[in-house]
Image (cartoon, rainbow, N blue to C red; front, side, top):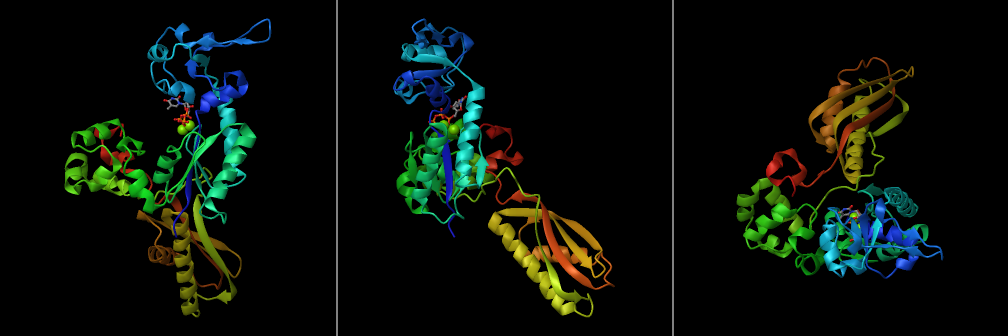
Length: 382
Ligand code: TTP
Ligand code: MG
Ligand code: MG
């Protein structure tokens, strides 16, 4: 079953929060990033006097800017003096992180009221797993956008796709106030024309190296000879490039309230004896492990530690666990490990309950290979 993953990113976030406070600046080029010296001054007639970018002197950089300022060429991370040359009349405001953090909490709470399966990706963006919700995709996205606006007065852009990679790319395609839904079938038409740097995980270094190979777009990555990519980027990153250029990504949406373990247990209708009820017990045990494997796969976890819990007819409970060389979500592997545990407990008394638990969890296909240690320093900023 295809997943439905949304990526939500607030529009011109810090700047938009400032405009809530200074609505008279709406529609103007506004740049955030000055120090407290650039705090607006309240005049005797009740109006405010704002600093202009041309008044700025120093070595600061632009934190963010309104879309009107972006139209003049002023973007995040640009030196303020350079920005002043492009947009001398733009209003300059100091940053106020307390406010941004407050609005960050507000928009996340608004989304959680509709779709609670959220991965926090920083101050102004989140992933949301919509797969388990019954609603129509666009309707759901519009409700989320309306809730964010109602609770914060701010607009956001949402991308919805079968995975995080595509959702993140899509939330940026129709900014501001965007809503973009793509399926894997749309990848050639919507994703392949994009510049490679639009892919989260292809950084400046990889972009430059790809350019040397004559590769500028995602489609050109998809069409490139895999051997050529391997030669220039190594097996890990080349394999990852091949997959993402086709829009493939299996990473789970990881909520902050991560489960420590996932388990299943069953209380028997009548107490069972390990030897006399061997067959019945073995069947129940195997079914528990297979179901647990399915649970893990559905929630997209793998675990390294497999444990069992037994409750005897006298209500005493014992547990045993074993740690595997590699994490698994495979029912048969869980069954083998749990069987090992079972051999280490006394089985004279009858049993009333049997449970199996997998812990030391990690997400299936955790992160892009660029983030793993094997990639080395060469691609540290990829
Ligand atoms: P972004 O989401 O990258 O940018 P944005 O919200 O300002 O604009 P967009 O509509 O394109 O999403 O970043 C969120 C906030 O993080 C941004 O408002 C300010 C801050 N930020 C920095 O401090 N430095 C940076 O280089 C960037 C890119 C953002
Ligand atoms: Mg943003
Ligand atoms: Mg952002």
